[in-house]
Amino acid sequence: MQEQGLSGPRSKRVPMQMDHIVLNVENMEEMIAFYREVLELQPERLDAYRSGKAPFPSVRINEQTIIDLFPRDFWAKPGQHRVDPGNLNHFCLSTTKTAWDHLVERLRTHDVPVESGPVRRYGARGTGISVYLRDPDGNQIELRYYAEGDAGDYPSLGS
Image (tube, rainbow, N blue to C red):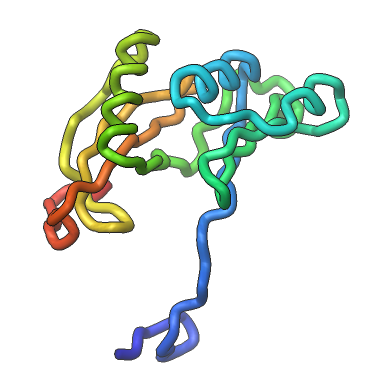
């Protein structure tokens, strides 16, 4: 089956995967603490960042994907006092049901409010169960797990 691409029909997908996303950060230490302590993502280049040897730190989602945390001097314009929300609506981190249960409990433990959910939402691997929360700079995060047998279910509201 051929798909219609920007320049005409195409028969193959280009192999691709997410490498990283970048978040503009107001308070670096608060963001590092949130991603490390609440979501249990491991920081990278943190010591190098703190010593001035790296321009920004990252947190690792998995072997292939990181979140870069850009400090204020990377994104702020003169006189700008808050992060510009830009085009990012939210990003989704998917995990196993057991790990999801653990993370939802960590949200409670750390007094991180769940804005929505659990709800069923469609995503890259079909329909999953999600909760929505915000990090300290207000970025919306969707935490999701996929249950067996949900792949063909398409609810009316997307992720």
